[in-house]
Image 1 (cartoon, rainbow, N blue to C red):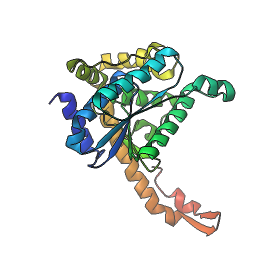
Image 2: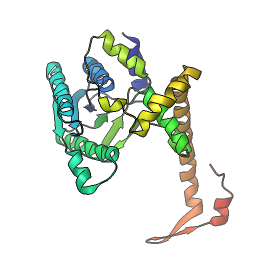
Image 3: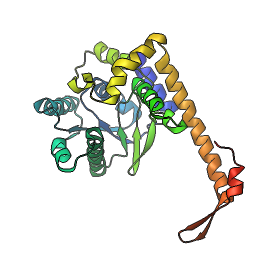
Length: 271
């Protein structure tokens, strides 16, 4: 078993991301990360006892090239005999009519479609291909924005979505390990030219800030992953304590009215 597969399987088990009988809907862009995850899940779906379907959204931002991404993912799924669901969503038209941040609009429309497909096929989990380098970028970006403990926890391996969950099984592996896995298996993927542009904040960090950090410490990706996990556990523990103390500090005095014991609250630790 390749080291990539060992690490991903161990992380899935450690975080309890997948259980036998789950129906996974993998969000696959056709890029290196999601294609690696697609082939990994296809290889192990019978061993894990899961159903696997694949979804792709063409945001229509790169003309024929982005539609070719959709066709590539569809053709890959056909070869692997996996159910495929794809849709082209006219993001430029939505932005022209309603305005907004293009990345936020893309994400909103993309996840709305994921939810639609999830409901129609009875899937209970959406899977995305965020990896350890994405985690590093998220944490460093959070630091520059005025970070809280919650934001420094970065990308969560699992969170609620509709009546199910979103999971990220690749958070334990780096971009280099993902690419090596594909190259070792002689697998093809699509390159998104927009990833090379500095128009987006994440790309600027990816191209200019992260390489400097890795020069100073080649293990920074692993260190940040450990930090994120520790902060996430701390946040969960503190939230549990807060919930336990809530009833001593706040009481409901009417249908839409609450009474706050200010003096009691002041004596509580800031955390």
